[in-house]
Image (cartoon, rainbow, N blue to C red):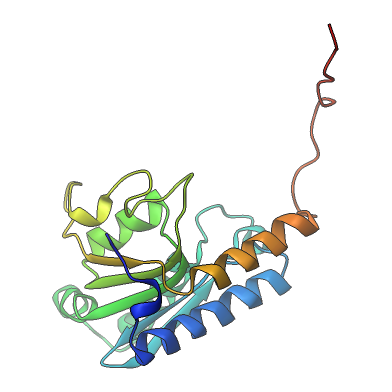
Length: 183
């Protein structure tokens, strides 16, 4: 994984801004604010935002949403499996937070060309923070180029806003919090 931050091209920043907008839509919907866009030949061809609460499906991360929309579009256009593989190998994904282990695995298996992300995912990151699945070290994985730290402060601010306001959709604890005793 390469860390880039402020040395990005205007195009990279523009695509990351679109991913940030998707994350803002997730925040407005009371979802963990992560968003992404998929780009082919300099054009956005798919976008996604976290929808895990809305769908009651823990796999509905921004990346998976964008991938499913794109694959459905290509299926409707009659693309064969080999044509889909060729097209995805030329695509870039811009996401506000480092892909988790699940999403990084899916991106590697699909054969995406490259991923640009905002902030690191210190608990579940699959592109260097926890595992390095972008390096093609999984069965059927093709690996992909990965660059992090792009608009990271904006991505962190959205996540901080979400967690500071509290998650109204979080389950209530089943037992009371433990109290500290002084000895």
